[in-house]
Image (cartoon, rainbow, N blue to C red; front, side):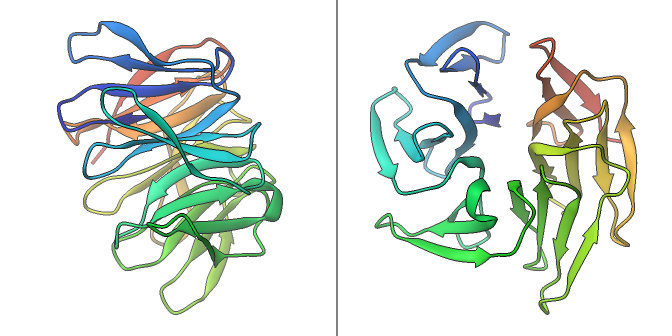
Length: 227
């Protein structure tokens, strides 16, 4: 899930093969359909919407009016998408256990390797990374290259990874019922419980809450961000 600059929420719906747009008043419309396994979604600074096709190993880019083009091919079950601090598109390339960056020309470069089936990642303000691995656990990569494997409290981390402007990172437990905050020391704490396989996650425009989408009941929930 991702918000555009005017507060529209875009949601990739895997089972329906579409992307829905929900306006600030709550009205839902279909932004794009006929997609094959839309898995990751993010929005660039210029309003371009990027959507990963898990089934076709591609990433598409959409104009705000819905015009679609293939942005990059040759991936391996891409999942979560995000942007790093320099504006590069990051792809959790599930089958190769890598986080890849996509240049403006569409070429691919490995950023992190040797992961455990990564499905989501963000770059933190200190230029480190937090990666959720559906194969188990959460990987924290420090700016000096130190790698810390954490997330023992998770059942199965999912592709929903979200970061606030001040660098707080939250990850969904797709194999469980919680959304958890990854703490600076590598521990985590639950900020929401009782969810049915949370899979998507985004910080709301107000910066004070998270939205999470659940796989099993097809619902989006709002979660206040605790102090």
